[in-house]
Length: 49
Image (tube, rainbow, N blue to C red):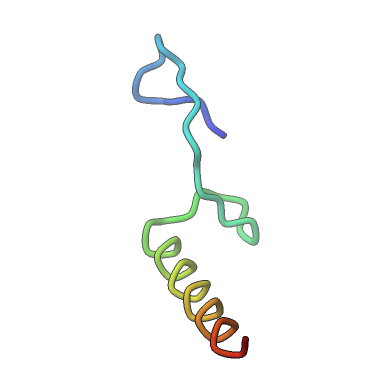
């Protein structure tokens, strides 16, 4: 969790996606690729049941 940088007076906690391999925040494209891979894995496991 990161503190909101846009509104420092309120200091709301907001979730951030991290690229753990690179030690930086993940981009939107990286997040979408990850979700697509997870969905494909889930669908293949669902078919085996």
